[in-house]
Length: 327
Image (cartoon, rainbow, N blue to C red; front, side, top):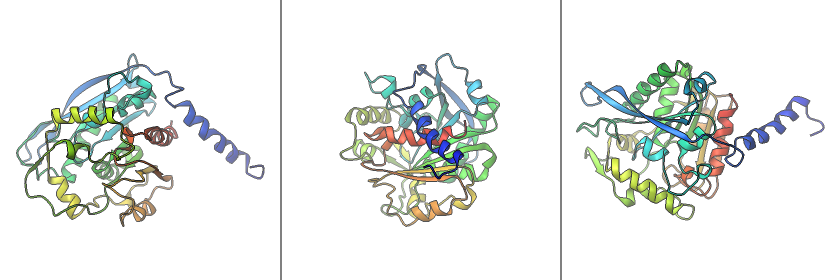
């Protein structure tokens, strides 16, 4: 390193220290509190008004407006099967905060105002009888409604976006249409390639234990986290709309990487069988991202549910490091 410019040597030394300083072991987090919101949206069936469920978490005694003023707002977006709070606020009895399986707890403990939402016909949002109407495009419009609500409430200009699977598509659509609203983007296991059998014709599909837990890595899953997630999912996501599955099985590439110029992290589990690295669009998509600040990370011994699996600490190190570069 002696031949490197001094600034570059400082950067190399600084990044590990930054990651370490925000690790769960070193943090002294304020216990997070949650709050429910109802946000106006538009039905994909007939254009009538409906209400979308949004959920926020931040540290107890911490002013979320101050976090917003410091650029520390994160919106996390769910996939095709279960809703936002179900995915991102998994509570396992007896697990201390620093080892929580809740993504919202983990990020709020690191000093973020963390939000999620349920697309229409998912979870706690309003439901109607047209499951095939809830396409990637319809879900992206729900993201837009909630993102604008958050930014208006917190009087902020931008937020960070983290999208998982289908959520990477809905978040990507929002980001390319509203680049001035997105600070840094995380695309986790983005759905980019055709998968599965022919597209469904039924409006909805019924969820059972196999459907809800099959995406976890067979040997890296954590049984107590899987069980807690399953219990929460069966309570509010007994069925899922099929519109997004039609997209997945006919035309999954809804976002244009050439239009994503904000700093972007793309992260996969190496053994993901839902959005596998072997997909023909994975590497061309990353190559074509317009962002000059971009990174592709592959985590070994991890599947589609990486952030709840044994290797989740690696996921948090990468994601938090990416977000912290702007703070």
